[in-house]
Image (cartoon, rainbow, N blue to C red; front, side, top):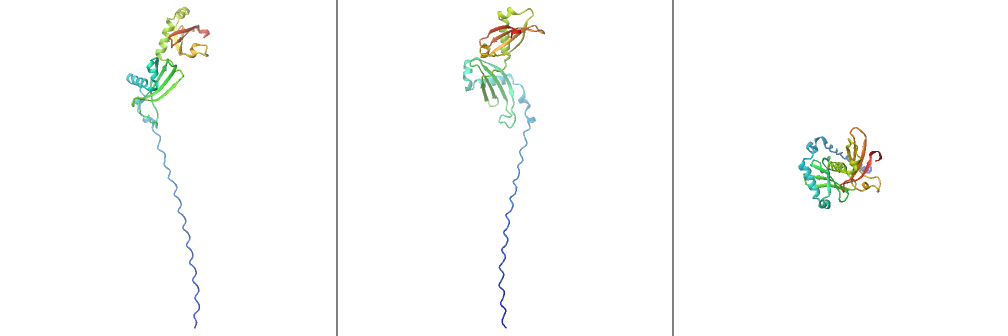
Length: 215
């Protein structure tokens, strides 16, 4: 008996391609917490000692960028005060001093940050802006105005210096427009001002004396 022909074998089904593995989401790195300003050394805020103030001024005057000012010597230290910077500034934690100097010879202001720990001038700003009067300048202007004969002639009985303040002219016709000056106001305590004397702090002389009502 003849055998039946065998059926051809079915082709094997292709295996389904494996799906690519899903990429893992990148992990978020949390930012470090901000530095705690309250943990700063409180001694950094303390007033400068006389020695620290002297070191700050010496460090500034030895800087080559203000060598001409130091050589001529016609300058006055207006302020020396502690300076504190916040983290993450690289000077955070350093004992810093701000020194403000007015250079009479060049008619400019030098504003510096001195790193007392490193003994260097960390920042220096030189401008034409005039800073407030120093106490020494106020005392000098008051003394010059009080001794001036023109002022004394206009003072009434009981008039005395009431206040000394920084003054600059409104236009170029006023000498105080381009020269560091102070205005000394005279009058009776508890009363109205009577006389105003303008003092040129470059030449140490009174440049004008006017009634307070016209000033």
